[in-house]
Image 1 (cartoon, rainbow, N blue to C red):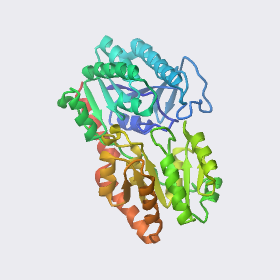
Image 2: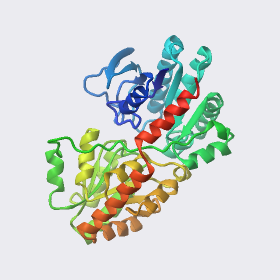
Image 3: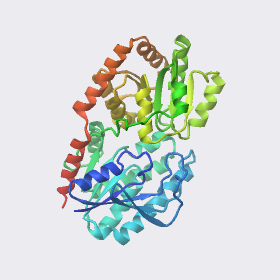
Image 4: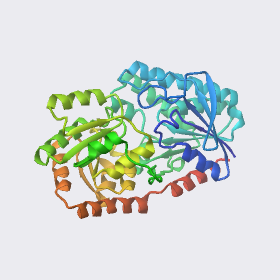
Length: 404
């Protein structure tokens, strides 16, 4: 079967369903190609070796990748973000109208919704089925980000309904998301939950931490957050908790590794607090190096702002942190919080509760090294028992093959 994997974000960007996923579909016996944009996420800046063109092809892990024109942006400007999404929508639509007929099925990674909307249009022209995988529920996540006004949210609601009515199958990444889609009128028999897996990779021979990070880690009890530093994460709560815990135990040091629109404001917050010794910022690193940072950490941290959306969303960081086999402190609600609590490897508090997060940090910091290792072992055991790439890919391939 010839499959087009349509996604706005792809390697070398830190995309979850990356070239490894496309390669896995190909290894299952299918002819897979990818249509994506020019890499600029999460900072809105083009990656080295790329420049904006109308079209370009390359090969990644043996899979042909079609690079389509877009306007690179990922900052706090709602207008620029809209232009970014719409530019890729137009490119995907034109590509699909011109070349979509050669594929037997289109598989779309959502968010954003716009590639799925383009596929709904060009697949109707070519009379081809398409499958939509939903990682973030729109328009809810757009509203939660503060990037859209109520009028835009209403337009997105109609666009979502249009796409969902025409999709052959819809794959939400949590049971809570599936239940919400059913409540919104999506037929249950068109929905199939497939949990995310982790992209964690064990160290390669000779692989080590960057010297600057290793130096910052030396002699401290290191709390690490790695990933996007955006509005949804509300990492000011984590900063407040870490600074308070540092006052009690000066060995505690928070490391924020990554980029995003909230990084500069957070750095200013830390300077205003006079907490430069308690909180360190590090530039984004490649995914495999980020895993070495997680390996070197004593505690991993995550936080999401309070929003009903996150009651039914499982952030991919949940599975990734579990796979790293470390103690976890998290401030988040819903299904993800339940998974972490049941793992035995995490202390979970309500989002926005810096005091409770401080107490969780202090509790883990007071443990012996052996006790922290035991918590980490519980995290990894939870991952091994409940989440795996092989199982998820097998379910995905089955759904794909049912459509043709």
